[in-house]
Image (cartoon, rainbow, N blue to C red; front, side, top):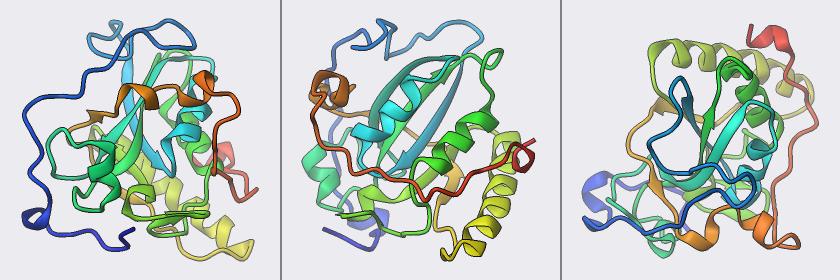
Length: 210
């Protein structure tokens, strides 16, 4: 397990071949790969082990599809084993495809924040390592500003409840690499599977993201 992110020059090189995954979504039958429906938007979040993280989003009204993968690193098309080594820079992430006419980016941020503890650095609960860090990968300046405001407001509420500063990584989205097929919708395929995700119990009010 690694607690520090290496410089990209120290990371594994990866490979040109992408991991082959099956389609469609195991839960709702939607495609988990492009092209996505016209008018849909995408969001990428990291909030610990992606098995439980993905389930937080696929059940939301307005979410079209979800997939798990790796984001925030430099290794091209990494494997799960490589990501867990800490030598890729990636975190376990969830790609959320949603209809902005039925669910807002703000609402997704609220679910993201309430579903995990964003103050734990390179870990989430008992899951320790750089691949478990909290992260928001935005696609434009508007999303970045919404995320900054949300994190700032939520941090105040967390600190009033005895938690430390938020450690969530906030940066522009780069490449999202799909994880191996057996990780996709894992908890739907394995209902008794491991989920180490746990929130703080601190609610993120609508006003913080309006």
